[in-house]
Image 1 (cartoon, rainbow, N blue to C red):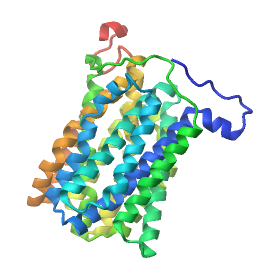
Image 2 (tube, rainbow, N blue to C red; image 1 turned 120 degrees about the horizontal axis):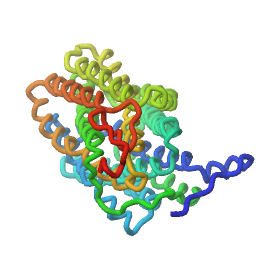
Image 3 (cartoon, rainbow, N blue to C red; image 1 turned 180 degrees about the horizontal axis):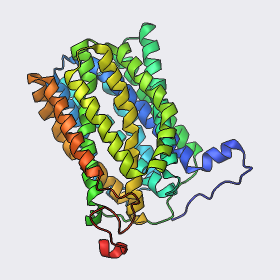
Image 4 (tube, one colour; image 1 turned 120 degrees about the vertical axis):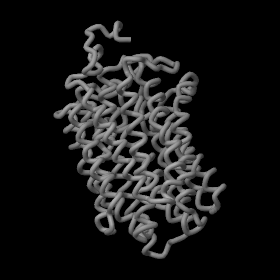
Length: 409
């Protein structure tokens, strides 16, 4: 496969930005999270105020949002006819289109449909993003470069959260207009990126079929548990602030703004930390922090404490990039695209089930939801101790050390 050559050291800045993969992935991730952050900021309050959602309705909507993630394995079939980069552009346009119409359908059915459209774009792009980053980033540099991409995500979130808060305080409180502004911005920026950036392809031709390899089992297990515990945060942490503590749109926006500001600074440094600590230690640390945060959610009685837990949760979520570098180190380079597609499906198996079932549990006692989250994070912590200190082909877990990648299959 052709790949864009590295630019000359003295190349003009714009030429370097246009031709370096990290800037392309930062820009595209910026657009993706510009849209998703806008949806996240507005959705809970819009659903509650305009459509009268209950906790059960929120759970149903979040389940619908995760269905495209569950179907992410189908991306591999699109790769048969479309370059990954092109498919990524199309996914972002779908994301923007779904967002642009969300505010004009304030009903359960309308929000389920628009949420599904938005989510198709978001999850398909995330599949492309993970695949290309693991193909284009050198293994030694991957943690640091993934941290830079995460900082672009945070910068997009910072822009959206601050912009929504300012617009709301200035009197623009119409949900339809706010959703439309964000959605159209995603479409325009995607078209601009299509014109500006060079063509990027990995150096190794990717397998164009679904790939499930036994030696990747620990990665699959960690991915599944991550999907379960992160879904509890995305579906219920924000709703806890709205329902229990009465947070309004600008309050949620400010919390997300604080998280994004911290992540813009912290993401590259946390990425470098993964490079120093290694995957085993990082994954364990992330899960210990999540156990404490979930227990805090379960028993918190003060809104400010709940807000602090929300911000901490958002910051520590960056450390999930250690799972990406883990599969990059143990996997066949030709497996990155199909493995990324399958990983998103595995990640969303629990995510499709948890929101609607835990939404019913929420009606009985919201604390039960977060206590189960702590139990899930504890299971993931146990799995983290199976990650070897120096993972690689034939050394995928501490249980099996086989120097032959072929034999390990």
